[in-house]
Length: 452
Length: 91
Image (cartoon, rainbow over all chains, first blue to last red; front, side):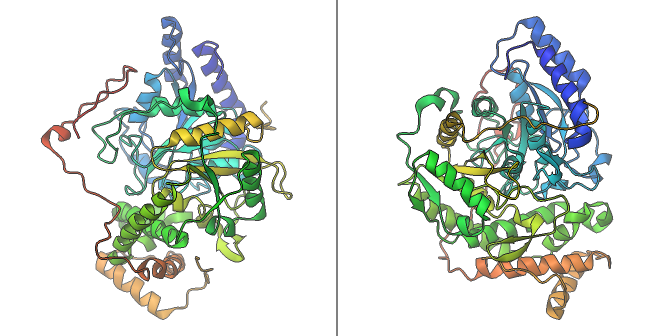
């Protein structure tokens, strides 16, 4: 992030949005007047806060005062405007950042592609024929397109890490319960996380540090004091034990994804493999909990106005309303069992590596993918490798690696750096070390927009 | 491992389950939505044995834990937005 004035930075962001968003389609609302007024106040005060004047944007499931919180839907267009900004927006603005707009997403966060039929798909800034990933696709794309240096998204099963992987930016899903969710539209209360995207590890850490803060109004937040990570970034990784996740995480990945992990492992001189037990069962548990909880949340509208739902996820929501309660409750118990077994593993390792997505960004409209020798539905399968991690709330940071897909050498693919609960510092330190080697990077996409 | 799915819904027993659950919930399924609902019901039904067949002790806790709500917590103060770290609130 540069150190020019806040108004200049906000204007530059607004100009970049105007020049590129007909191609990318990341924004659903641009708040020029509000942003310029707040930026002017920052400049007038000679502000020196850590994020002073940094433009940012949020997935449109965050409450923004004066806007209806759409959560990617058509249905919520009728909702009354939010009367206050979400807690995390207020945290970033309290650190000096300036909100410039709201971003596209999969409807009600149920998807991994941001092929939103109501607002149109968000396109990958590095190749607009391809998906941006989702459900926080607008957040990752806005950062990759250089529209904003910082964005917020949510991650229930991979919705920060999947679009970060496909758009080539850094994305952090913190530990479950670390950041307040107050003022955001829920998807699956058992699994919802919020977190930041950025184009550098330093920016990601600065944002994460600003986002931390206890909120007595969020019953899901853990009673844990903020722990600053920025001062730890340059400590290096010599004292961290790092391994590569095998089993499911290798089997359910295409060669390009395995190559990305191999490249990161080489850069870190890692040759140790780690195996988690029963990963397929943990993933199934997360799928069932998501399907049932998400559907129950929307059951009144599913009964009354199913045709107003996103056609790409409506039938999945409807099916979720019909699941036996015993499946859901057993899934919650299996989650706890799995979390306990994985915690044992973290007694001998600090960070483990796994692909964030099974492949690079597919073309918009792709229905099926070949993964692990199986033909799988593309939209539900992009989260195969992130879902077992968020199922047990571990912090995970996706770092962008380039050129591992011979069929699409211009595209990135993310590698997850996964740590034990509350060890975001370890994820960020490894990411910082990788960024310093030049292996991982998040360049602004060169967008051939007609208006530029 | 998750199983590949057959997108053509032909399983009569699955259809009966869907119809019965819809009736119980008062959910009227539009004909246009029915094929997709059957596809996704089959997908999740194929995953369910991974969860249901795994032996767990009856002492295994669920992952979701209830947090009691005290009167102080119900009146949780709003963040003041000053930029200072927020003070510990009641939990």
